[in-house]
Length: 119
Length: 119
Image 1 (tube, chains in turn green, purple):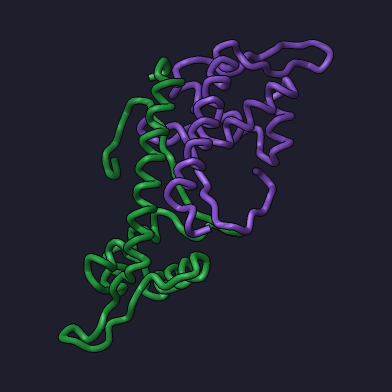
Image 2 (tube, chains in turn orange, brown):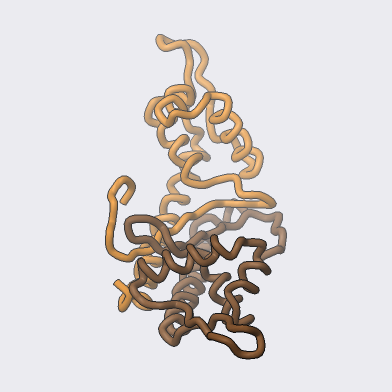
């Protein structure tokens, strides 16, 4: 529902992953998906209005906490390199998005079950 | 799990209510529960380190968006007045907490279902 303004009562759910601290949420998810699309972390961060150094730090932090590499660096080529998602990253994003989508769907169901009378 | 530091991978869920804008979340919920406990919005806001004027504004905003009164003002008495939760507020908090608790429980189940291998 991103970008759509809803005037009637509804719930919003923010989902994040944490260990000692929160390290993964909508921001890193979007960054990774755009990096996969553009095959470039630089292009992905630019399209989100984020500095490359911040994007790089976010990816490194997530890699550290998850314990596997998220991006593979491509060297050279016609566009002078870039980044692709590792197979582990593709697998993780796939599972994470299923987790996120089912959690949000359930939240909407619970909202209807308990709070429908306030709409 | 408030106040407990968990070092292994887990999810955190933040639930809020919104109409055009977000107006209800963990902050107002805590404020209302403490107001019920102390029978005083002033004591509740103080115990949260929040100014009375901010607390008052949050309550008024929620009342406006929900469409019913949350607090009844007690006049006079030995403690010079205070605030109690309206019956509609008690009913709403009861339902909201059920909604919140089932949503969080389900999120943990979905986390286990999809992301258990990353723990």
